[in-house]
Image 1 (cartoon, helix red, strand yellow):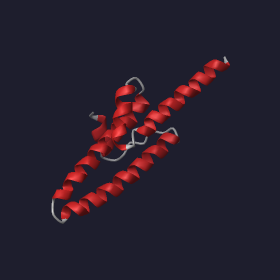
Image 2 (cartoon, helix red, strand yellow):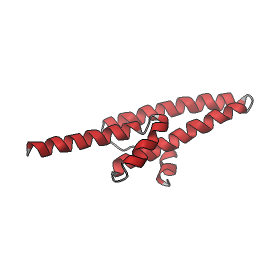
Image 3 (cartoon, one colour):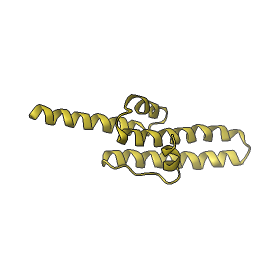
Image 4 (tube, one colour):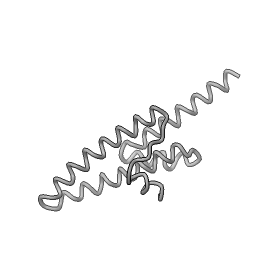
Length: 108
């Protein structure tokens, strides 16, 4: 019985690590591909992928004069804050749907 409890704890830790990895840029693709059976991990992985795509698109806005730098700075700060909030929600064992991003992530 003790081995079962330990195994459940390890699986929970593994799922949390993968879910937290979802908010680390391109690493969000790893949990999306590896752990397709766990809806909790998939929820966070999809939100992480949308954040990563937003970050990549924000880099391309730097090519637009004047407005591009402002948009990039605001996007960078917003993505950083949302990534931290995502990791904290994983550590707390919660699944918080980000406004707007959560809707896009659900469509993936």
